[in-house]
Amino acid sequence: MNENPLLAYAEKHTTPEPEVLSKLTRETHLSQVHPQMLSGHLQGTLLRMISRMICPQRILEIGTFTGYSAINLAMGLGNDRPGFLHTIEVNQEQEERIRRYIMESGMDEKIILHIGDALEIIPTLDETWDLVYIDADKPNYLNYYNMIFDRLRKGGFILADNALWDGKVLKERSRLDKDTLGIVKFNEFVQNDPRVENMILPFRDGIMLVRKL
Image: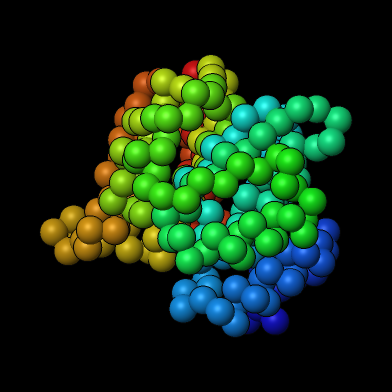
């Protein structure tokens, strides 16, 4: 049960979590040192709805973790139109679990899993992206943004998780650790990028929404 009564109310009034995702949530909390990295019911539903609203054909996810967000985004592709999601996870120990849940969710024909360093894998993907979701190592957020930007279609969207980083973005710059500094540099760059319009959604740990002009 969520300790925040407003979030608990929001979850109660949100479409129930699909059983396969509920099962993945339980397994993630039992097996992972940092299960809070999981997107969770509310954020997962938001990602699925955004995907359905955008109607993408090509999605890139940077940072798979146990596969929860990838499955939600792929569910948004729908069955009435062609579409694929490429997701990249650096931790090879997650591969078996990710593939198992992709299969169980029925998204195995829509999700293409890559195991390895995203900075090395992204240049090998000959795609034009409609939607990119960044939720990986924070010091490289800006590198990922710059790497994918020219391959993002006009009008395409970038979503970046952890844009508020547990409030640490408000600290003095001289006191920032490397992860927080990576988020701050990313947020500042996007805010001053004339090629986009953007907003930070103060939801959960903050999501930066970016639309390419």
